[in-house]
Amino acid sequence: MNSTEQYLDSHGIRPTAVRILVWDCVSAQSETFSLADMEHLMPHMDRSSIFRALRLFAEHHLLHTIDDGTGQQKYCVCRCKHSSHINHVHFTCLKCGKTYCLEDYTIPIVPLPEGFVMEDAEYIIKGVCERCSNKINIK
Image (cartoon, rainbow, N blue to C red):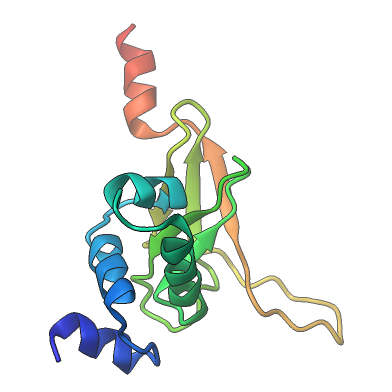
């Protein structure tokens, strides 16, 4: 078994040829990405195969999904130090539309009313990213 196969297998994912190809492409991404981005990077791969692999990776916590309000599901390779994505912060730029993982920033746990059980938490900050704010300052 190669390292990708071992990695997928160690996370409870059967390493098929499609999953290995998609994971190799996904794991090389340093920023958030969408299904459309993966289609562009893997033009010979069927859209539904890519989608199924992304969904499976997210279910097994290799990726986390980000709903940044753009209407397009985004993904990011999970580099969290903990097995859950709780307290994970993202920043979406209102100028360029990019979403960034802010792995070193956390949010506090919100106390919930009795009987409520948290299963997931998302925190999206919206504003202008450094690159776009520098463009604004240059003009």
